[in-house]
Image 1 (cartoon, rainbow, N blue to C red):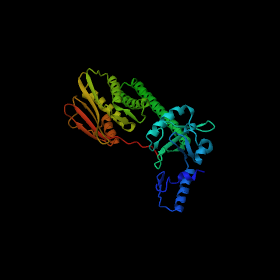
Image 2 (cartoon, rainbow, N blue to C red):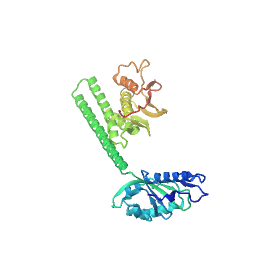
Image 3 (spheres, helix red, strand yellow):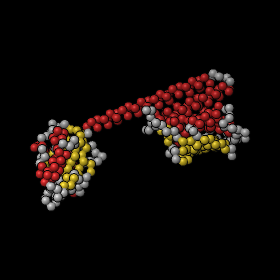
Image 4 (cartoon, helix red, strand yellow):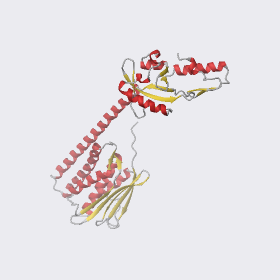
Length: 372
């Protein structure tokens, strides 16, 4: 058991302070003995290992949990440097750190941001956390070290890391397979279009191929992304538009393209609808607003428009839409799809006809939550 005298006041006229507990000199002898007994019990039977160190880093006292944790009887610890409880590779470095701490002692965790290890008598090592606290009731430079074995916590953390790594690999593989399957569908639609003579049917197949390709590109970007939940939308749009211009045989010299979406990241629940919307609007602009031989420009802009809100706009300076055109009642599949996708995003659609056509959609990015 710990020495009872260690818990006593230093003098009859000076209060003792142990771990924030104050024993007033006015207390009766019985009260003082009860306080000492309580402090002894708190020290000896604490669930964490406790070591009391002097200014030179020698062990003055330890509790029962310290004996159990490190495998030494306290008789072998008292008077020894605290470095004996550390792996040998850390001892020289710790001596320097200890001297720096003693120069300005304060209550703090030891080795913040570092992996700390203890060494048992049998030579085995284990992970630990240490809280250092100087004793305020003495000028002798005494420090209390509270030590906790965190082996189980580290093991649980490692299991979580491995589980998250497996989950990330699985999700990445899912994106890869979905992308491959959509590319197969796109290829099948292309092959089917080569065996169709009716131009309207061939156009429908080509549009469907573009939609499959737009979704496949989202999954490809997620597969290659460090963050499996979001994609850099500007990069996605550039590649999507490159594929679209190529599919329609449009030269960048004939139709210039400007994209303003730098620094915008969207999750899959918003990226897929936005990608399909862009596919439809730009396809429509290339086919009808800027037909073959007509030069012009297309501008795509995605920017925050408020807390949690975005505005996506597609503008061209082509021939424009008829005055009686209504996006909500149109029977054209592509433009009807734009309206449906905007509703999927709970977005509001605005149509402008000044010097061409502009479609603006304001929406809130969907918040994804894990299934319970």
